Length: 133
Image (cartoon, rainbow, N blue to C red):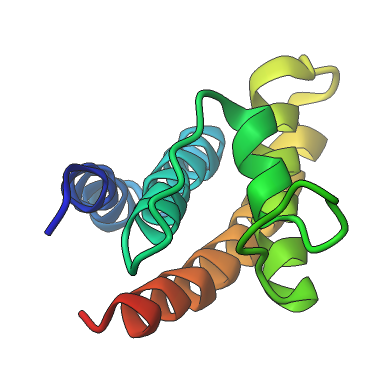
């Protein structure tokens, strides 16, 4: 396993712990951890399997994964790209969009986490299958 895959699994362990110990709270952190775990899975996808693509930041990674980016050398299928990008956007929302109404925000984050959780699972399976792990 590469270093990115190790970090993805490390982040995923924390996510699993939060899900187990706090099933009805910390949805903002669960979304954030899910994003950073899938970022490391995607970094492993880009660098492994003969692709040998390293990225410096989110913008570069997003371009490499986006099937609509002209500079992309190994884009995801549109469906997978949309899942990745939705996780990215939901993570940005929980990190940067303040809480105006706590009960409404909590419910939204809870719902968003269910979407993120499924997208994460789908993308993880894609990467594992691609890398043969």
